[in-house]
Image (cartoon, rainbow, N blue to C red; front, top):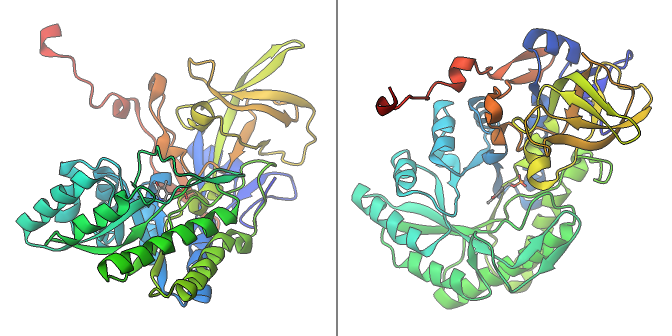
Length: 441
Ligand SMILES: *Cc1c(COP(=O)(O)O)cnc(C)c1O
């Protein structure tokens, strides 16, 4: 287990997170429950910013990719740390605005931003719109011209570097739904198109090469392609690109097969990116661009655990044993969606020896609703409290009301204090927008 300073078993073997015992959290808030360790979130944000300060003269910033975890409390944390954010819908913009976050520090991404979303973003003074499609250029320019403003834009490029957890490839075959290909000239066409628009100003270029990436060489390669492109823009148009946004995708620890990170290791991705840019700036003779990174998972992923209570045990003798929990795919879709793997403990007895291999099964009516397919645990019984680790990213943000289960509340903890970041849903909340059509009455 990758225990951290602010998330560790006490001497009785009970997991304590942010100074609060898990048994207290269950008593106060019930299960299933998402718990987020604020100290961890803050420490990662600060470490990422410090890395840019140390290795890149502070010439840049960190934008939290809020699709990983979006609610008012997280935007309030980002505001308090003077972070940038990345948003991907009007709903995320609305949530950030309602928490008092200054949207001029936000980057608006998306491969099909709705016209209404672009209008909403512009009307609320969005910082940068990241252009992802040639039609979007004209639509956005029209919106801005009606409003009489000049909007900062970046373009999302596709550098042809595809990174996965343990490998990466450079490919000319680009079949992504995101971004303009650099290789086939689409990205340059988009740049020239933006430069013709009176109400748009070109702020920078973006890429995002994948997610849950461990091999820093993938980022080195992407920097090389991106700085080549910046040089090409300079040679073609005479313009020096002011900002290079290298996206997110930094890998985190889910299971034994992933590296265990100290905060310092965590920052290594950014350190390597800064060094690669510094080298490229010198060798390619381009102006040093402002560096943005956009991590989501690495900021919130390991800050979060999900607490569940054990219900039925289904022991199919000699074949498989299921430990059923009061949550499942409605609070964590990742195992069903892409075979994501997790680790877990019996949280009131973390140090007990594993005695059997079981499946941790959710309560939804889907055979695929398994949170962990194979895990070695002490013998679990009804009422035991299970903690699943590294659920802070893409857990709550992907939750649903499948089977009309309530989306669990999110509690934040820090220095022995705890409070809701997202309150529990009532049955009434679940059915709030239901309507029986008049013609059925
Ligand atoms: C998803 C995404 C991110 C964040 O990715 P993580 O793997 O959570 O760090 C950043 N930038 C863009 C454009 C994305 O789509």
